[in-house]
Length: 553
Image 1 (spheres, rainbow, N blue to C red):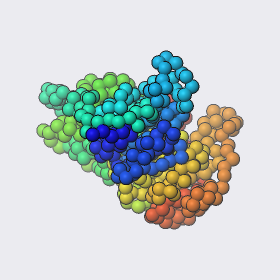
Image 2 (image 1 turned 30 degrees about the horizontal axis):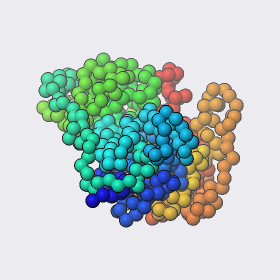
Image 3 (image 1 turned 135 degrees about the vertical axis):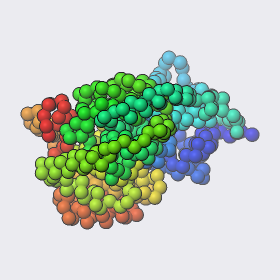
Image 4 (image 1 turned 180 degrees about the vertical axis):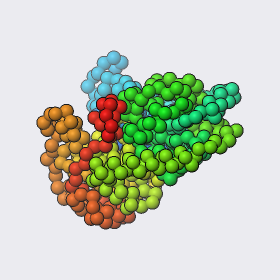
């Protein structure tokens, strides 16, 4: 018994428990869309392929499951590349399945001019993905897709590309054919931790006078939050999180330094530490102020990738393995150390100092953050874009729990927020609240049609400063005039309503903003709230890094 290749692709996705896919049909992918009909997999049809990849990314981040984008040959596939750069930088498990030129029309080493033809489509994806595959025979579709999905999900997770020649979708393949490729059981596994290494790390931490726990996105993806919280309390060690790990422990945890390390008071915790335990992080430039933080006297790293753990701050000891499992093992035998109450008081003082300064020097930002925290419904997911308001959220918003904040922490791509929120909204009974700037929103505003057609529970907050506010600040800071950064913006309320999306506008972040945000974020339908306001960027941006400029904020 045989089925055609398109149905084998859908069968592979079904066997992988894929519940939602994002994509845009093309002449080469029509058999896939026909096969998806009635499959039980929900198909979110977007208006641009970049949005499909961003939506798959947002879905993956909020669920921890595989995000899948289905796109067509050539320009359709290429349109996903910029979004995959962000997914790669943030280790997001995204699978892009694209058709390629029919194998019957290919001549090796030659571009003949077939519709949508690219000389080497897979090669375009290799620099921006964890792995890239091209199916060589129709019978390989199931095995390649399965292996690609496993590769994307395997720590360290990341985006993976699969190209399928379009003619394979109509070719017969054997139904139930066993995969020919590498099975899950043969995927690389980390060797068991050496007990002497665990004992050594435990001894270093117990002997430390001023330990610090630095937590990255890998720890959040492994579900290590509870274990980290317990270890921190036993060691009386402050917890500093990267943008990707926000929400990994509750905001009221006694060891959490809730503000970013870019605040000098928080940065001092790093400077004073005699032992740093780094969990699931690569110490990227954005978090370390381009590596201006000094190498700690002793650094212990927990990571699934030895190269990733050592590329920026070489560890004195590396514990290779899953963050949650290693932290749990490390905690065994560690008895509570004194100093927890003293640490909590200091962290409370740091919180007061930083928040007081924000209220004094950036009152509009303080008002904005307070409004978000006091009005958004419990369990909602906040998605930020690369914009001034997004920088404030990424650094200073108090996230209630893991996977409740989605932001472009890696590549720093403007226009990420709104299309990523499509994936969050499609993830289930959760309200997605996207905060974006007018410039970023306009790169993908056509996805309002997707939001309303798919009835996605999304609130879009557009902070309209009529330009690229971040770049405007950088020009002013550099002594330049404003050139290319002031934008003509549409009537966003009228634009949204033209798609059938309810919208309203307010000036500033006062009582009217709070009232409407509370109302909008509790609706069952998509909506848009436009806020006419201008914010000054926070100290998490390069031009305000205190280490680089040797200035206090």
